[in-house]
Length: 304
Image 1 (cartoon, rainbow, N blue to C red):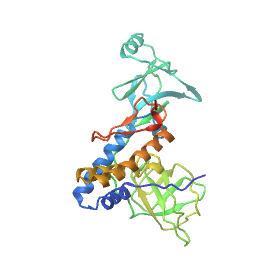
Image 2 (tube, one colour):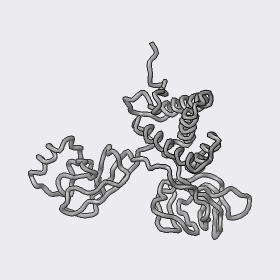
Image 3 (cartoon, rainbow, N blue to C red):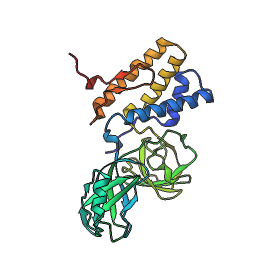
Image 4 (spheres, helix red, strand yellow):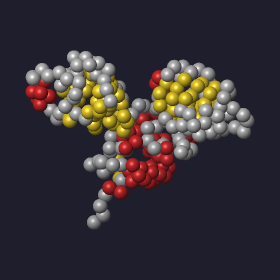
């Protein structure tokens, strides 16, 4: 069941940074953007976050061992290759030396035994014979910077209850896969339910597919007002944290230590809760805020 997401878009976080710092100048907002994106990158490097794992695909090329990895893959966990209706799970090759030794045999086959990641590409052994067999990649994805302001100048024309098919008036681009759309809540006919839905893929400027089925009343031949937003790549209940960090840094810079400490306290509590709820595998116990004043995940420390 689709639940309402208490999300914070890039535009919302930017505006709140201006409010919390009492400084909405373009220069300050741009600095806030940098701080928020720096914090998100540092956070996402600290643990094997389950919310950053996705399934990505590539296709084999006939008589070619290596093909490019999808653009946002930062680490490959496992691979399977589908040939006709059969799924094969090749083993990972740990070093280039072993990979080169395997390929000295010059074998070709559509049944993969091993895979190797090198220089932004994935190689299969034996070398595939047939093109367009699907290589499915379980991967940790890289996180894009928050840069896209809310889009409010398009409308939803068709979105049926229980469907993932979305039609809007205009303005969709392929880069909006992973963005969220919210049909504005209204009591009139052919309007939305006010909930956020993630966009899975974009077909063209007017059609897209949602990750989950739409749960509101169907919009049919309508012009429902909506918002399309870029969201931080962290769970929605913690999406305020990048702005809190940026505000903390602002007041630290202004030498307003009382205000800085208030934001620091909120940041510490939120970060601890985030690690407790979502961190899986990590050897890093501390998130460095860049100011020689670390906030520590108490859930991963031992008191003696």
